[in-house]
Length: 241
Image 1 (cartoon, rainbow, N blue to C red):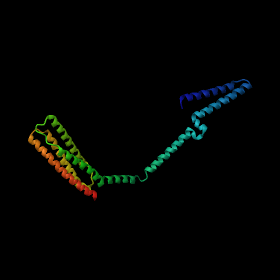
Image 2: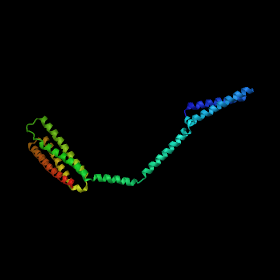
Image 3: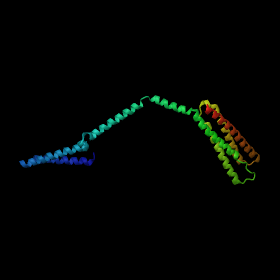
Image 4: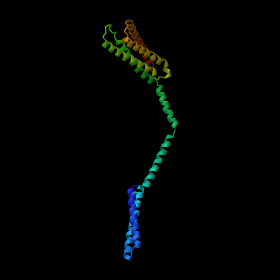
């Protein structure tokens, strides 16, 4: 309760006590009667407002609206909600957990899920093969800005081939397709080496070394394309089965 409300009640009760003292000290029947009536009225007012302050106006209108009743009702409601939640959480918790784990495990081990992800990786790898195949040999008298442009493009291809190889190696696969999946990893590893050789080609100065790296890049890219195409063919057969 705020301090000013307590002060107001204290003043009201003080006035009531003063009225009692005045009634006791009054002389004459009329004065005593009037003082007594006023004193009773003041004491009744003090009691009434004290009740309102401590119990609340709601309790005066309806006992159900008193702070005590409201607090008790809230406690009962909270206890009922807590008991309900406790009851729900204790009803077969292990079976629910087992079902969730089983569904997650089945989803991860699903061949369909693996095929969908593997096809995307294979298509991305074949797209990079085409980019390497389109990369043309640099002229011997190429100017430095053009060489740097070619080197930047080769570096981007090297990074992209390394990334697709990492995707293949990290792809979760069921045990039933482990042998098939190893072919995808091997093919993308060859593609990664092709990207590495192509980038090296753009950075070398010795003509013989450059030519060797360029030819190696093309050769490895072609081999990767052949392996990936064969892998996709086997993957399609797996989907049909």
